Image 1 (cartoon, rainbow, N blue to C red):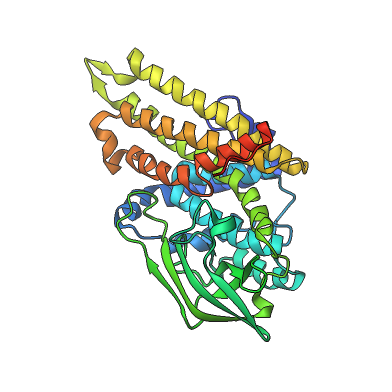
Image 2 (cartoon, one colour; image 1 turned 180 degrees about the vertical axis):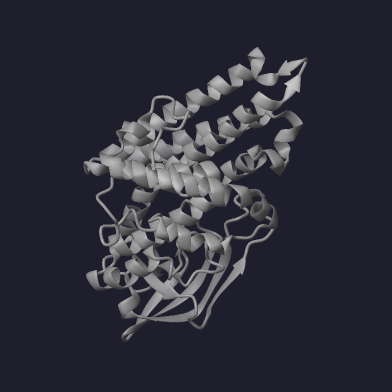
Length: 392
């Protein structure tokens, strides 16, 4: 299947990919266009997740690109970013599902697990046989998770007893395992645990009435004397620094998803501008509409250049916290502008699902905040610039 850079990839960054990566991306794009795009608005409106897409995503390799144990060929961080872009370009919720499954859940085990844990769990997650979730955020702890984590884990012989609560946990209403991050009561260090969701004392309750990423099944999790064996403790997660090492890898991919979300809204606006007639001509012939579209394309192009470079740095082992933080802060801010301009192009029709823009406009708000708010990522970069921390 032939691959062509998207028209919205104005400087053709996609041409940087290796030929096998282009082929894989072309297959993913074709499937998303024919199988996911037609159902996105319906499932968004119903606030349901289309479980039928999990196996095809796994068959296409989208749940296994990131990790050595399962990748079908040598692939780059730039390619993995383009996978997130293509997913989000069709639906940000689907991109979020893959980001949680492949980045956060699988990533936690890959980065912090033992060889035995990687061998057992990563193939199951890559095949879609096992669905994963990532439990860090709490009702009273989000940006301050490094210090304010309230969920506790107590060692009792060969087991750990976990108590606490989590909030905004994606995939958690149907996950088979959740990576739970908890503070060890003995040394006050954050540790990670692979918690089967069938464990007694574990309950997940869907968060209702969301206005963003409605397809994503976020949940409140309660943990009441949840007992997990030492064999399910992530053996290389011994402090929040280890948790942060997972987030460092996934934060840049959220920036890629932001670019994809902006592209989805922009492409919908371009299509609308070519069809909507006002004053005797299509609105795409109007100067003010062209101005909005050009500003949108400028945002997309600048953001895409940034995320490509950040991923190249990751491939070379050069990416640091401040690099991914700047990409996430910048790309999500430009995404927020772009989806607003796309809604403006569509006028009143921009607030109904029929034209897709409304869904991208709403979903952008969640991407703007999750995996590090703009403010927190700004302070990470500010610390690097000035040498002074200003978090409080």
